[in-house]
Amino acid sequence: MSAFPSFDPVRVRLPIRSDDLTIWPGPPETPWDWLAGFPLELRPLAWDYLWVSSDGGRLEIRPHYFFSTWDTFWTEPDGRVTAQALGGLFPFTLGEQARLLEGILSILGVLPKFIEGNHPETAEKLRHIEGHLQALDEPERLAMPPEQLGRVRRGCSQVVWRWKLGIPRTRSASGP
View 1 (cartoon, rainbow, N blue to C red):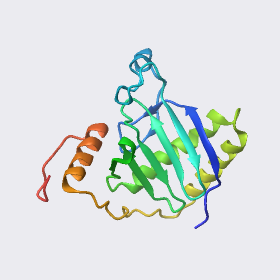
View 2 (cartoon, rainbow, N blue to C red; view 1 turned 90 degrees about the horizontal axis):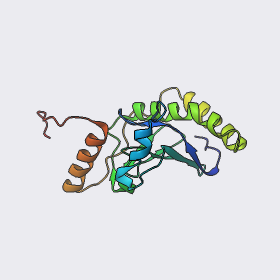
View 3 (tube, rainbow, N blue to C red; view 1 turned 135 degrees about the horizontal axis):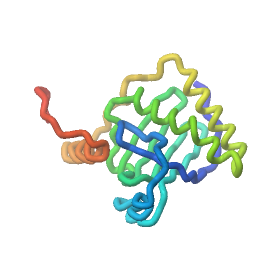
View 4 (tube, rainbow, N blue to C red; view 1 turned 60 degrees about the vertical axis):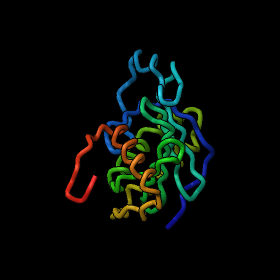
């Protein structure tokens, strides 16, 4: 699998919403959003933004939005996505590789126009990465092997991500 082009981290001010399984470009922020900032990151009076970078082996997107809690999304050239919350304390992808990749592609579809004025080479590299990911016939839909987390850490991870995604807690026949 070919590698992504490399580029240094770029900060992009971009409205982001996260009321789904991943990040999506969102509507413009309201003055209340700006005033509230990022309460979980202790950053009041701040707008939504993200950092995007590539080391050649993976594309990294670190969004900062109302409920971000230091989230990071990594995408590999084969289309696999890894999501982490709280600076890596809670790695959890919910097994939804296809949906996560859709979210990454939605962000890649709008990022170049936000940075092409100041970073034209990076904008072109982002278009190349988007084209590469769009061209995948059938991305790996199997989740990566489950993280070897302890029971308490796994339970906390599920609670954090369900809260962040607005998923109500339900009990199933297979357990919590």
